[in-house]
Amino acid sequence: ADTADVIIIGAGLSGLNAAMLLKEQGMRPIVLEANSIVGGRVRTHESVDGPVDVGASQIGRSYARVLDMVQKMNLKLIPEDRDLLPFGAHYQGAWIDNAKWADNPLNKTVGEERSIPPMLMAQRLVSKYNPFQDVTDWLDPKYASLDISLRQLLQSHGHSEQAIKLASLWPSGIDIDSTSVLRMWQEETRGAVDVSFGATGNTEEQHAGREQPFGEIHQRKLVNGLTSTSNIEGGCHRLPAAMAATLGDSVRLNKRVGRIEMSDKSGTVHCTDGTSYKARFIISAIPFTMLRQVKIEGGNGGTSPDAIAHMPYANTARLYLSVDPFWQEDGLPASFQTDGPLGMFWAIQNHQGGPTNRAMIVLTGPSARNISAKGKGSEQFLIDELARLRPASVGKVKIKTYKDWALDPLQMGCGFSFAPGQVNSFGRSMLEPWKIMHFAGEHTRRIDFGMESAMESGERAAIEIMARA
Ligand SMILES: Cc1cc2nc3c(=O)[nH]c(=O)nc-3n(C[C@H](O)[C@H](O)[C@H](O)COP(=O)(O)OP(=O)(O)OC[C@H]3O[C@@H](n4cnc5c(N)ncnc54)[C@H](O)[C@@H]3O)c2cc1C
Image 1 (cartoon, rainbow, N blue to C red):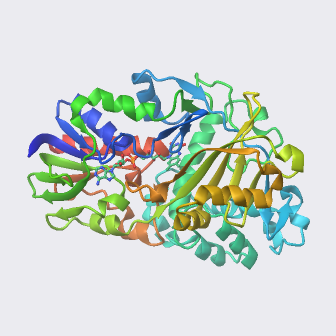
Image 2 (image 1 turned 120 degrees about the vertical axis):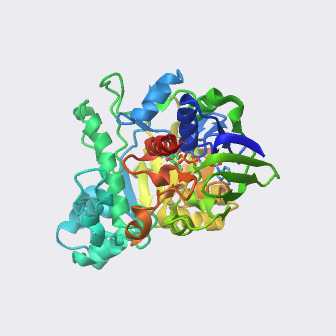
Image 3 (image 1 turned 90 degrees about the vertical axis):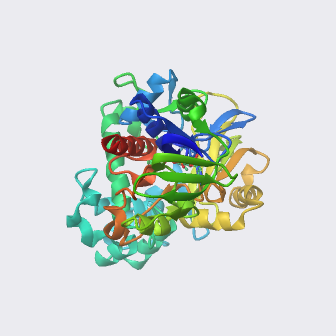
């Protein structure tokens, strides 16, 4: 077996950050990556219209580690250019004007619920009951009794049947039964930190009288040299590619790990191509959807085996388009959400002034699950569904690229979740090393979110190992 001080499994941002930090401390890491490219969920597809980030792309002002790494790698940040045009909804076969929803006969919600646009029901009610003050509150045992589903939370507050139904159509997380509200509040609380950094900018431009359900109106005004959200020029994949380049031949591609053997003193990692690597420590930096397919030999591992086996993953599938602005013809809302199989249509403001707009069909929650089950033919199915709802779109839409993360054989989902009860059963303790194996990856975050959480987790795992070495 090839030997190293630390074998890191997975060359996403978490594994690469851990490897760079360990190398900086004089240790010899080897990173084993199953794919033929690094970066994992930071992926850029080349399309006829240039690079398209199909995974992570948005870098917030509060992403300290990511911003630092972008600078070290000499990459250029550019202002995010993805303001969404105003939203409506297609619900029960009718077009809904969010501003008039309170008086719509289809609205059977009660009291305060009546004025919440249908598509925002889940988001607003999750927010309404969020008790967290701090980004680590989700781990505080004083909230243990709230490790419940959104349905249970809404029922306990006496919400109407239709409000619960609307929340189930467009949930945050997997669906309103499968995700703990502690996990939803974790994400929301960390998101608010980023927004608070942005709020020092040009709020007049930010609001401009528009309903922004996904917060996608971005400030281009610079605060401390940064717009509220940035992208990497040329595509986000340049970041992991540059990080991997600093590690040279320590990064081994096309090395899918299939088996890990451990003792208290060392571990051997076996790849499916028959090669083996031996080290004093191992870091697993792959999603638990993938680690549960790896055979782990070497005794008991506290709550981590439970987490590896049972942590659920959410999905998103996205169809990236360039469109002639057909909404100018049919007069219907440019962006919209549906209770049908299309999920959401995001029409993106054309700041460049060219003849076409960018747009995305975005599927999350139940609509993402259904499209993954369909598999082949999904792209045409979505275009046909768009044509059914918006006949004016026929002939005005060009596909750039498509990505369904649940169907990616090295991911099987877009992001981790906790089912109701799982923060209590393993969420707090699952990071304890399993003998000589430590855990990194966005699913092991404590504080941050998105790419920053992957960086956070790689840093933590590297520090844990340096403390033991
Ligand atoms: C659609 C989408 C949009 C997103 N948008 C944003 C955004 O705008 N901003 C933001 O901050 N974050 C965003 N994120 C989240 C961000 O991409 C992730 O948090 C982060 O990239 C996760 O990094 P990671 O290292 O934890 O895991 P990964 O990136 O998943 O890396 C794991 C690596 O392990 C490899 N692997 C898997 N199995 C094995 C095996 N058996 N052996 C060896 N290698 C293996 C995989 O190929 C992969 O390269 C988005 C994610 C998605 C999916």
